[in-house]
Length: 261
Image (cartoon, rainbow, N blue to C red; front, side):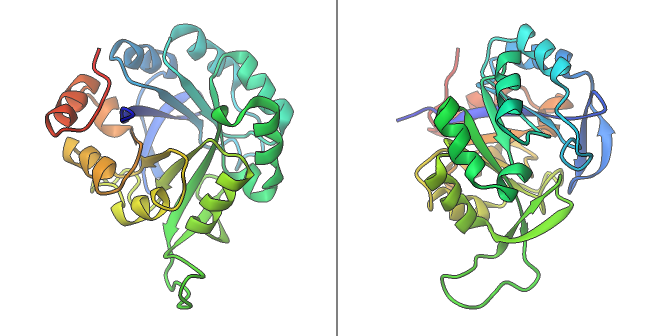
C-alpha cells in the first residue's frame, strides 16, 4: 500500500505567504523561504507553492522566489500560478521545482496537458481544479455533477463539470489532480468529502484533497472516506496549531499508512 502524503501549501501573494477564507480576506503568514525550510525540517512529504494572483494579473510566477525555495529544501516541490506554456514549465523545472501545477492555462487549452506531459513526463504535470458547488446543478443523470470548475484564482466560472474535467485531464496525460473545494477553503470546517470522493473514485491518478482542514480528524476523513491519496493543508500548519509529526502520528494510530522518519 502506498503511503498517504501530508503536504503543506504556501499560497504566495506579493512575495509573502498568505491565507484567506474562500479565496478572500488574505492574511500574512510569513516568508515563503522560511516556511519552506521549516516544513523540510518537519519532514513534510512534499511542498506546494502557489502564486495565487499570477494568472489573474496575467504575469509569470515569481521564479526568483521559486529558485530560492528549491535551493533551500530537499523534499519534492510543486509550483503553480501564472504558467501558460511549455517555456514557463521548462523555466520552472530548471529553477528547481519537481512538479508543475496548472489550472487556468489548461482549462483554456486542454492540449497543453498532453504537450507538457509528453515533453516532461506525466509524473511532473499536476492539474489543479478549483471546484465550487453549483447553485442549481443540472438534473440530467450522468451529465453534470454538483461542482463547477473555476479559474483565475477562483474568480471566473467556466461551466465545466469538475468530475468530467478530472477524467479528461487524466486522459490527456495529467499525473495528478490537486482538488480544492472553494466552499471549504480556509473555513477549517473539514474537506468536502463528497467532492473528494467523487473525483478520487472517478480517476486512476492520485488526488490531493485541499480546502477546509481544521483538525487532524479532517485529514483522516479526506484520506479514508474521501479516498484521497494526499491532503493539502495550510492554516493548521502555518500557525503551528499542529505539526507534521503530530499529523502523521495521529494518522498512523488510525491505521493510515504514512511515512514517518
